[in-house]
Image (cartoon, rainbow, N blue to C red; front, side, top):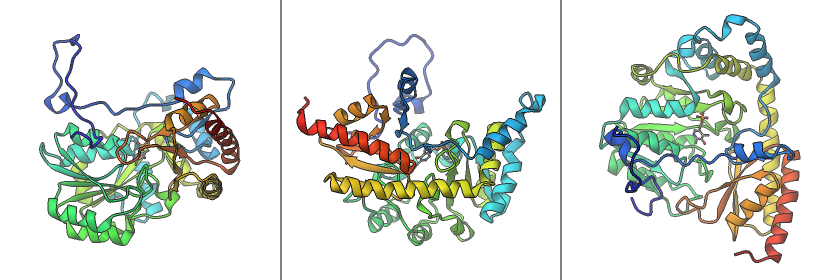
Length: 386
Ligand SMILES: *Cc1c(COP(=O)(O)O)cnc(C)c1O
C-alpha cells in the first residue's frame, strides 16, 4: 500500500542465517516500530526524565497498588504458583465496577492481547478490516498476521471526526472487523456514543472494536451499548490512566458469545499474578484516579493557552496527550531530548507531517516542561538548523 503509511513489504536483501522460513502471513510484515526512550533515560541517571513518548501516566499508580503487591509477596508461595486462571478474581470486581455480568469480560495481558485475541478468533485470510486512520498502528500487525486486508479510512481532516464518511465506508465495504480507537491515538478524534450506536446498527455482520484505552480521560464510554449490540467489543487498559503499563493488564467487554469464542484460543494463565492483584487495588482507589485525571485536565488547559500564545499549531485531545506542529520537528525532538524530555515524533504517519505528540501529566510537570520547551523554541528562532 504505497503512501498509506501502513506496514508494507520490503524485499529481503541480507542473506538469512537460518533455513527456517517464517509463516506466509508473517513474511511480508514489518515489525511494529517500537521506539522507547527507556534506554536513553537509563543512560542519563543525572537527569530527572520527563517520559512523554508513550502516553503512560507520568506518576506511579495508587500507593494501594504497591501495598497490595508488597503484602501479596509476603507469602513465599505466591510466585511459584500459577495465577488465578482467567483472572476470575478481577472479573468479579470489574463486573461490579462496570455493572455488567462477568460473562461479558475477558481479562488480558495488556489490552493489546485483547486486540490480538479478537483478530485470531475472527479473522480469515483475505477478510477486510476497516481502520479509521491515522491511528494506533500496533493493531495492524495483529490483523495482518491473520492475513487480513487492512482498509484505512481517511476523513478530510485528520483532527476532525468524519462520521458520515465512515458510516458510508462501513456499509459499502461490510468489513469483517472495524477498529475504532475512541478517543483516537494520536489525533484525539472522538465519536459520540450515539454515533457508535448508529454504526453498530448499520453493520450487524461487522464486529466493531472500540478501543477505549483513553476513556477515563475523555469521560466517554460505549459500555452501555453492549446491552443492545452483540457486534461490539470494547477494550480497556490499566496502562494509561491507572499508571500500570509495566504490569501489563487490560480487558475486553463483549457479548457473552463473543467472550466464549475468544476463550476457545485464550490462554487462561496469560495474566500474571501481580497484575491481577495490582488491578484490583487500583480499582479500589477511584479517588486517586480522579485526582490524576483532574491534574491532566488542568495541564491541558495550561498547555492550550501557552501554545496559543506562542502561535503554535496544536490540538489538545480529550485524552492525555497533545499534538503540536513544529517547523523542524526532528530538531525540536532532539533538543528536548537533551533536556530530558522524551516525546514522540508522529511525522512519519500519513497526514501528520511535522506533528509531535506530548503525553500530558501533572500541572507541576507541565510547568517545568513548558519552561524548557520555551527555551528550545527561542533557540529555534535564532539558529536556523539544517
Ligand atoms: C497504549 C494503547 C494500547 C495498549 O495498551 P496495553 O493495555 O498497554 O496493551 C491500546 N490501544 C491504544 C489506542 C493505545 O494507545
